[in-house]
Length: 122
Image (cartoon, rainbow, N blue to C red; front, side):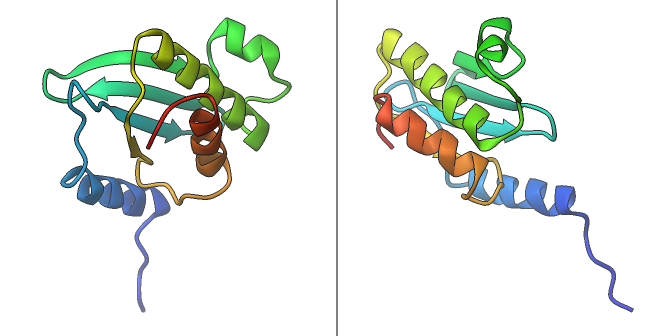
């Protein structure tokens, strides 16, 4: 009988493999996305020094107040615009997109598209 690895283990394995090729610098930091069952989180990270430059999540009061639900595609799109606006205010225009091992569709794609429309380039 063939046993399957859990989806979480597969995702973490994919993310570790991707991180061998992706890293954020001061000129082009990394936009890391994490999606849980209830919320989404996005950070812009400079990996050379290990600092988070900008962060946003659906847990924040001002973001949560604008949303009907915190775990759907609309929430992801709104979070993408929020993180992009905060990044542009700090002078960050170009990033490397780190999807965190998640498949690029649905919420992850909505966040990425909204961030692009709000001024981030990747």
